[in-house]
Length: 273
Image 1 (tube, rainbow, N blue to C red):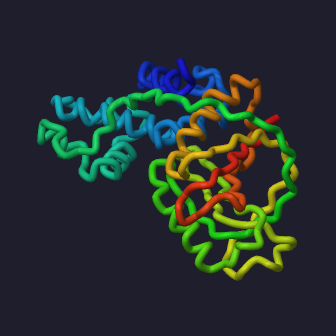
Image 2: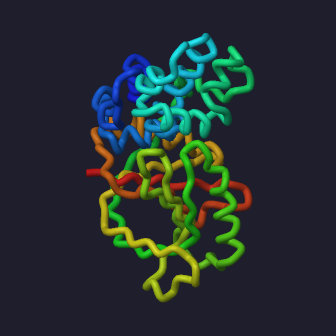
């Protein structure tokens, strides 16, 4: 059973317990950092947010079925008070728990059912290669995203290519960093500079130290790169005996990549021990 499937099973069978990312990762057989990235790639959710919304969805179902008291539901859902539970419930579903109990149904509510991790056919593993990269001084346009909503990333690249002449750049970089427990992360669409004095005003500056990376080449259209990410993190790296480390990973675009068509290939670079 793949790690994400093990994680979902563990969350669903321990839903009334106080779960942390470390707990779920231990039950899944991978590190917390690895599970955070893998779970996001496979489901679009952070582990913490998935646990929270699943518990609230279960509580909503019990309320719709006529649960007489709210405080026990609040406590079993991981909240220490009626007020905290009500606030989280309203933020998630747009109305307080009392209203769901009065309605007696879940119609129109964004209830989260257990995630079914569908195993897509894994493309044939490319040759994994090791490369020591860095140190790198990068600058570019950065934005923060939730794992479930990354639709703004292409517009970052469009803006970068509009504002900067990148023809002389050997590589451009899409760097994922600073992931938190809620699945929010920073994404930099950028390029390398010799010193940060070359960074345009308002652009993010990011220093990456020298690091050992495993590199896999994604040769398909850029729109299918999530499949390669999932296969790399969930299948190829473990099979090859590599352990990712807690450091930014990135996509590296070379001169073969055509941003107008999305074809040409991309290097996926994951830092490893």
